[in-house]
Image 1 (cartoon, helix red, strand yellow):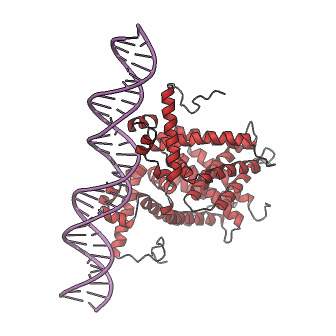
Image 2 (image 1 turned 180 degrees about the vertical axis):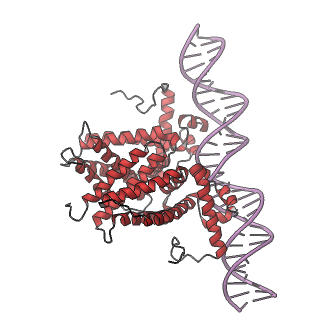
Amino acid sequence: MPAEASSASPASPPLTERQEARRRRILHASAQLASRGGFDAVQMREVAESSQVALGTLYRYFPSKVHLLVATMQDQLEHMHGTLRKKPPQGETAAERVAETLMRAFRALQREPHLADAMVRALTFADRSVSPEVDQVSRQTTVIILDAMGLENPTPEQLSAVRVIEHTWHSALITWLSGRASIAQVKIDIETVCRLIDLTAPQARA
Amino acid sequence: MPAEASSASPASPPLTERQEARRRRILHASAQLASRGGFDAVQMREVAESSQVALGTLYRYFPSKVHLLVATMQDQLEHMHGTLRKKPPQGETAAERVAETLMRAFRALQREPHLADAMVRALTFADRSVSPEVDQVSRQTTVIILDAMGLENPTPEQLSAVRVIEHTWHSALITWLSGRASIAQVKIDIETVCRLIDLTAPQARA
DNA sequence: CGCTAATCTAGAACAAGTTTCAGACTTGAT
DNA sequence: ATCAAGTCTGAAACTTGTTCTAGATTAGCG
């Protein structure tokens, strides 16, 4: 499996080695600053300085702070997906496995709550100009959930359920990050929404 | 029914008539600018000018742009609740009634997509300093949904379902506003999540 | 009425995201 | 090796949210 730019848009010119290195330094600095103080702590001037790149260059690579943070999220999601893949969830039912997977992801986010804050806030604050990137994150999340379900060919109904699960996942994270819901509350919400999966299982009726 | 400050925090000093008028002018200007160009079009200097108030005064009434927009949302929600109350939904099941209510609200938002953009983006971007206000919006939404269900004493399970519905509602709105989901898609998501209600109906088992 | 505290105003000042520009450096092709 | 095109740098400028200040106005009270 070649480690190529899996997140590149179609028809984007290939980056030279030094460019790839710059990109990496920028993402690293972004994640580091985010880990310290969340969304507000990721200041473009600081990211530029931290990654040894001129401000203008930073903006050439990532056209806005939100673009940068969404890209940071893509990066982290890839890690996460790799990690999750190694230890597949143990639950009996698809619903249990999905809930277990999401809770595992949630625990990972709890270890870096500021980073989570920066990424999730960016994701939901993104306007149309960031749609392609946000969509990519969404697709990646979908893949993770479908993986947990263990499905090759989901029905349209199941895809709907997955989308609702993603909605709940994002929104529940936000309520947690802004201190309006406890960890336990998020757990309940995830478990509740995951029951939708059973409702749309092939043998269940509409 | 006295038209008092239903959104006031506990222990907030009562406003004089002129102050109430100022507050109203500000909220009106905010909604008007938002209707034009969404979140970005609501510029604090313009709001101040539009509402004939000094910038410093605007900040005394609403300590940040997000506070202002969340307050604008509370305002709009009150309207909406009043409107919805007049024509209760007709569906047979609770799930149908909730879906119908939310779709009605959704259609209202479609009429002012920019306003919707400003309000929803503010809501999800809000940090901890706005939690009380955001929570108030959330409670109001909960009331609307419970109204549609026609329940006096919801079970904890039903409250969980309502929370998940709210999550889906907010997040689905965001995907629509950022052009990543169609109106039809939002409809499907709402209908899908509303099935959770049936799943938690008293006669259904966990 | 006249006083005092609170509020409001105009405007400057500051902070951080974003844009712009002139000049130095790289890259790729010849 | 050399040239043209594209990229990077450093620094200043611009925008918009937010804060601050000094003085004018208003509200409540004796």
